Length: 475
Ligand code: NDP
Image 1 (tube, rainbow, N blue to C red):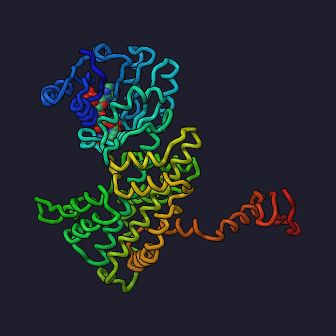
Image 2: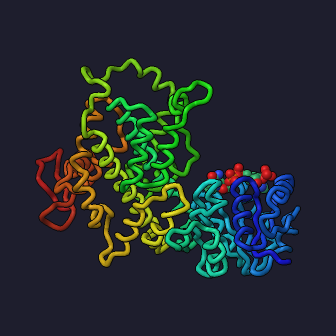
């Protein structure tokens, strides 16, 4: 039998995607550098569908129908290049290599260009949903040529998560577009997690609630417009009791957050593109701050607010925090979608934000009811320049903003760090400001560096002769 697709790299993600494909009736050729993984997959799950076990790349390629589709699920970075180099010489024009790993989109662009020279389609596909998603239905974000999507799309749509019958997979755009949006997805995920963590901290310190009580609060919130996978698992984590100590698990977990890099990439690229993703940046910085044990150690003695009492936040605070969380979350998503638009323009990808919101509704970590509202906003007749200006979100912000301000004030009063909430509110206020102090910055720049400024009342660039008679000249 000829296999419809080959999967190489059978660690947890590759094995689960291969099983998902086989469970959907596809014949899947499977290969892994170390053969024990291939054997284990066949022994444990061979009965789930049609697999062709292959010991070598040559065997895998020989097992595939044409055009061949080879899905690579190995460690991102150099291992991915090594595996591409192993397979590419065995393939023929028109064949496809799909990289489902967490590649940097600039690597994907480089690989796509190099393989295009050899008439091989290279598809960088973002895959979200972790191991469970890979098995039961991930959200898939494939880039690459339109042509490759025709040959590959139906199969990927088949194994993707479905929401209202719509698959969480669509062609994102050429070359690195898929991995780019996966990167920003992860950046948004960082921001969302940070905001939830701040909400937890504010409620715990501000109201003195226990983790179990907070689990109830998040469970209730999951019935509101905040309904999402991340809120749902927050309740589960908070309810978990440590078997060894009998304490809430959250109290025995080290409070130093780790990261694998996609959040950091999002911010690095946002800096290059000039997109203010302040919510995502604060989330990445908050994780690094948490990991700086030495800074935290010597800073413990610094004074906090005098007279602030934990648990004193008072009635209505929980609802205020819920509103603040929602408003801040809208800002984080708006910033992420701005970055996607900027990337799309910079690299000529023509990404459709509405269809992106559609495929993030299921399968991925940021899946949420909320994404339906984003989809609607981008599908409306007048496309919003920023999500904040889309009617549904403007209404939500109007409803939330007083609560949002009270929460940021309360956080400062009590000395509870809330960088995500604060930066989101500052972004909101800066965007809506009639005038920004950037005018003063332009003046300063002109003073020390003759960098010139533009005027509100006339076209052109101007410079004040600061060290002369301070008259203005046209630059
Ligand atoms: P790992 O990232 O742990 O990678 C292990 C796999 O890579 C093994 O199959 C290993 O083969 C193979 N490998 C490593 N180096 C080489 C090499 N030089 N040549 C050939 N094979 C090599 O596996 P995961 O399943 O966790 O992830 C796979 C990819 O999916 C990664 O890019 C990851 O970032 C991405 N991803 C992971 C998610 C997750 O939740 N884990 C979610 C979404 C994407 P061997 O067995 O021989 O060592």
